[in-house]
Length: 470
Image (cartoon, rainbow, N blue to C red; front, top):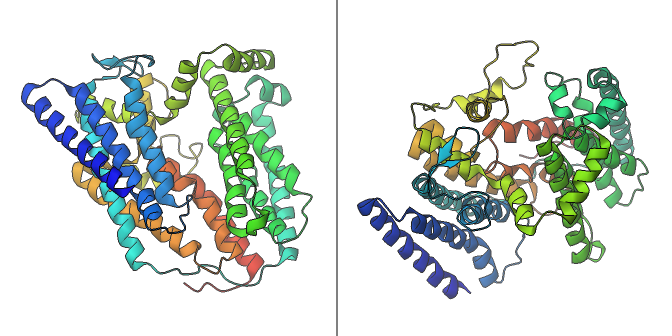
């Protein structure tokens, strides 16, 4: 397998170099360069998994490098090739309308893919370097107390009920929930602290699930999971729906006995169900549905009338970060000047509600969204694009190296053996957001896991009553 992959990688490198030289000399043939670079991304992203298989190691397919590689391929290989295909909504032959008056062409995409390739190599080097030096180290240790789990769960349920009482007048009641289905997030802007109890429902669900995996029946688990899903569907958070089920699966994957693990068809059915829900919510939100009857009609039409190519376009729109990055490159530094770390420092401003500070600076991705659409909506260029926008090429090199090292360090520290339920719980909460950095802004991708991890860490410390060993 490694020999075949080595030949494929060498061929992709040769094709990329040849197309690159030809494009730079003639100023044409950028399409061929985009294709070659996209295939090289695929070849390089396949190496970590191929090496594990070749060495006959017991590969963990939920390791961060695997997840990041899959997302990377979707953004910088599948999506660009789709844009060049006859099935895309638009082509890249001429400057292309993407968001409002923004445009990019094949040359911009080729430049973006160069940065993406460099970032992928640096990420893999950082991940490997951390692997060689980092030993498993437990972060939380101590006896697991089911009695304290009950107290944590009751407290979480009470906080959720209080949050619902606080935000219900803001939402406007049940009619508003139905009428604004999938778009309630806009009504809750500036009320993040009031809604915190509802946002923490996944943490409560995961704590109960871990206790269930240790042999304790938890009747509160089902209503908590249902409430969390309903809340995320109402506010239009597809990631919230997906991540909750991923949290639960990860905990089961690492804590359940092998004989108790679900069959592959169960996992596949779960993934398919989550994809259906995510695409349906995306379609409802994109069309601005205002009542329940319309929602049912649009949802039915999505799966019965839309052609496969249109469904693929809807799905791949979730991986349009290379498009946005290309728009930034096309616009140039006069429109989007260097941020010099400013977008990362926004993390310290995030906890301050806009209702307290109306003139608080907008995050960089919101500024990009406003430039492209005229609406204050976040349109991120992904981590590679943000690193480039801050520090150009050195930012991509160093930032992606540190990203790889951080992913591996988290994996080794929280999943060292013997597996500790508290550490697994924290890893399950953090794992979905590690590859999410490829898709979102730095602040946008880290705000939610920090909001989860801080109370989760406090809860685990309380439940286990142990001292940190490192």
